[in-house]
Length: 439
Image (cartoon, rainbow, N blue to C red; front, side, top):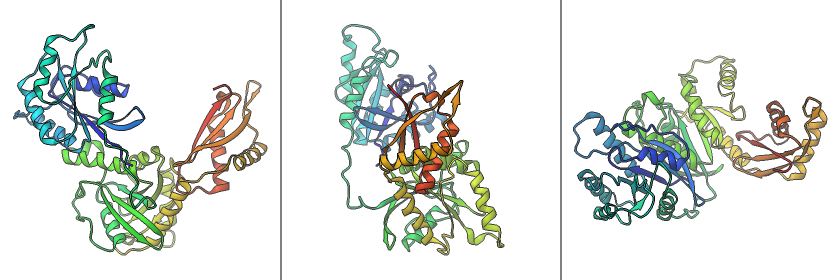
């Protein structure tokens, strides 16, 4: 399920970035007493009260500025407002209610989004000063006193935000459908692939990179099962993402991966692997999603009997961080090997959801430790008492040991490989955690 989006907005220099850093618990946004420092939106996961949401920092809004940079910031902020489920409107206590605050408040009224009013820079201890109450004039609702520098009031602010978040989505009629996010660089043929899957021209397809601006869901049912394909905007290198609408598209693409069960990484066979492909696939890998690599436009490649084998070997090196991901060489134009893609997606999803009993896991562990003894250090040998599976999506295994400092990364990788040998687990990453006795 896609995470709700909470946008932090306000005019320049009211402390939005300081508040953003305080809420996420680290210094991610640049903080400077200069208007326009935060030019782009910054996204980060935030968890409060058992709810996880995407917190978005924005540049300061200057509604009527003719400055090119400030106009760009205004567009960015408007896009964040349009995509937000809840808005935190930040104002400054020392400055009082300004004309710009009133104009921003009018913008937020038009958005019809829930708004939480944050009066920042309430840094003094004791009762609230009389000037605090003038913020009721904004007509936003109950103002909340906050000091983003000291952290005072941030808990109440987050409580108010969580209260305004949309309820947890109920499972819809497609609860048994596999959600597939089609990701990759612009112009790799993602929309063409989905059009072929659907058997109709559902997506806009053109040779202009960036045609797909939003994530679009398409439902498919065939002999392989039920699927929801999510077409996403191509994800470019950050220094090439200079259009505000396209930046919004990147956010939507990452959100599509968040709510997908399987990510299909589309590679352009005529271009080959690029550094950006690894970053896009890396995001899906980090989120623990099942992954399939689709090498598109294979019909446009000049081939001999060894071409596919050589291409596969090269991609295995390029995607060495996700050796579990199967590859399908296909053509969205002709439909070549489309059936194989469905088979790989189904298998990857099943493996991502696989649960292995503790008894079977410990049989695998016993055989693995008998074959290769656990490592020693300064006369101390690692003892692995038992292993259990903590969760699925992706499969997450926990080893309980006498001393986790002795559990070298190479031995963890060895145990992962032993589990994969027994259960295949093609298409899914697995996680292995170590717990020391007494923890």
